[in-house]
Amino acid sequence: MLFKMFYDYTQYCSWIHFNYKIKKFLSYLSSAILISLLVLFQNGCSPFSIDPNSMPSIEEGNSAVAQMNLELSRNIFQVIAESKKSTVKDKVKAFQNLAVQDWRFYQDINSARQKLYKADSIGIDRTGSWRLLSRIDCEAGNYSEAQAAVRKAEELAEKDEDFKNAKIAFARATHDQAIQIFKQGLPINVNLLSEALKELKNILQKEPGEPSASELLLGISLLLNNGPEAMFAWRSYFWITTKDS
Image 1 (cartoon, rainbow, N blue to C red):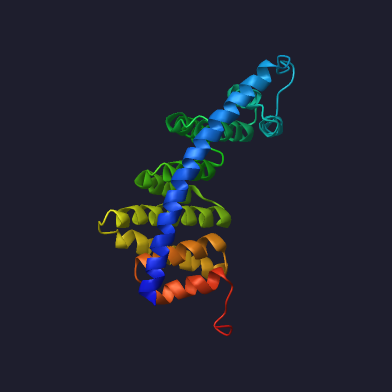
Image 2: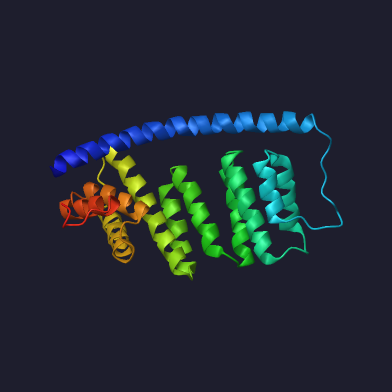
């Protein structure tokens, strides 16, 4: 039964990987279309400007994104990031938002990375900046860099939620890396997977049914050929108690 579960899981991961490639292509395509539409939209409207006598807010930048005005949102975030009048918290948020735009809209990981380094240097929400960097590297297939970044995020974490999110991000990078290695017919890193499994199990003991932890624990358990943990993860994901089974 475990072999069948593992086979089904690898088939699922293959579909996910194929689907991910399609989604990545569509993401690039939709970003290009969106940017073109934004340019056309903005060129057809009266010129926008930022009032020099007032400091724009993060909310205004987010609102500009929601209204498909990417250029205005970038200008707002850049003003906040560079102004001496901005609070340190807003500066960090501005750099993080600019990094997301570099990554999502412009596919410029290096620029996103530099902005997150600047955010980190300010000293506020450092764990958030490193976790975002880990997410960017993980989606780019830079798994070792993603693992290193999220270890830094965990090291800087102060709240329980930040610790949990860092551990889940580490498990995701480790899981995705192992899937790619497995597909190449190479030996997976059992030590890293075992570390991730242990951390996920700890999370689920505190938060039974946590969806991301449950899903990742199932995948990692199958990669490690660990039937009991795979069944535990499956039950956790669907909130099935031993009494129900």
